Length: 319
Image: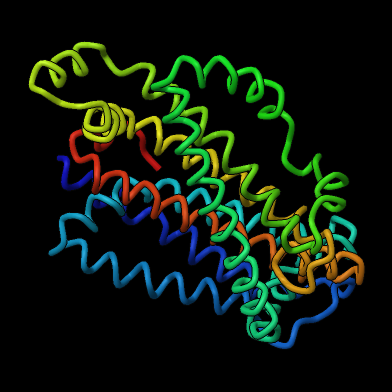
């Protein structure tokens, strides 16, 4: 009975994909929409159909793929129908203003035609994000450990955190532009600030919630202060630290867009602003989709790393 249910769930995306492909082929594009060079939406659905078929066949010999497709079948079906509805509303019948809502073909056309600039922007944003994240993450971890283990440090730093932390990092743009010599340094500072607060907060909170019995036992066994910090406190607080990294990642991507508007000559934030000023909204949506995919990929890798390092807690926080 369970095998039949899994099979039905795995087959659910097929009717949605086929229906989407048929409707896109049978219904002509609205004359109000600017025509794309090729039917990219049909290409995309066809590629997804082929890829899903390959995974579907593999699922009969690969248990992990079988479980994954069975659990995601209904969602993939609903997502496909949702995209099909958007295609009908925007591309086929143009029920929304065509200037602000271009056809899906035109959005997808951006990737093969503008891939060089998009790649350059991704690399530029990636460099800025990595530098800012490393600086903010290192400072946040150090500050969180300091607050968690030192009452004196907590006494002086906690009020400062409560005052500075809740303020969005993007709000400091007028000040940082006057403090730093280049706009790139200002952008790095804003990303680092957006990363620093959640990692500091969750690290200190995780250490504060570690049971005192752990430290008492380690002290009885002869552990020194540094051993208690890095062999007891920090490992026990790792679930909270990874949660802080999750919040920091989301905050860093949000800050990145604003930070690159301070005078950057490349980057996804710069790309979105430039295309919006040119009223090329197909490129704007393409950039937003690309940023969302990259953010989802980074978050997935973060939780994969968490599951690898914290095997005992696998499944408690899912992504």
